[in-house]
Image (cartoon, rainbow, N blue to C red; front, side, top):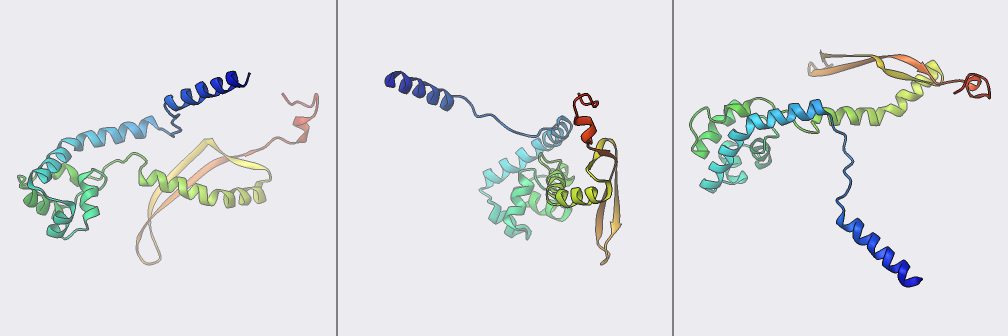
Length: 190
């Protein structure tokens, strides 16, 4: 009996080891599609820039020093994760021996998978949702905000020091949770 149990356990462990791990990801086909399109529009330019860097033996360090940028910024541009600025474009094209204008497609901001904007919105909700829920409970009782009967407004505003800021307003219908009468036998609960 013990050998059968050990054999079964061994088969189970080997089977789990050979199976690919489940991927738990939040995917948005719209964001994925936009990011995919953005990357593939930039890919030929990124390939040309990185091939030129490799052919010249240019490192992030040498390119950064020549163009007065931190090496990680150069790496972010050459990996498609940061937009290239005009003054840096001219320098990088010269350093890489590329024709003027070759890197122009990298001037527009990339649409990133797991974009910073999405990450920060998740972070803001994760950090402040407990306080927002507490405020909602104080004002509406045991209730939540609808994301179906819902609008979002985004606007640029100026901060107290004149800096540009982003204001996001979520507006949703208040949805109360069911009361005890919905939970009594024959009281209308399902």
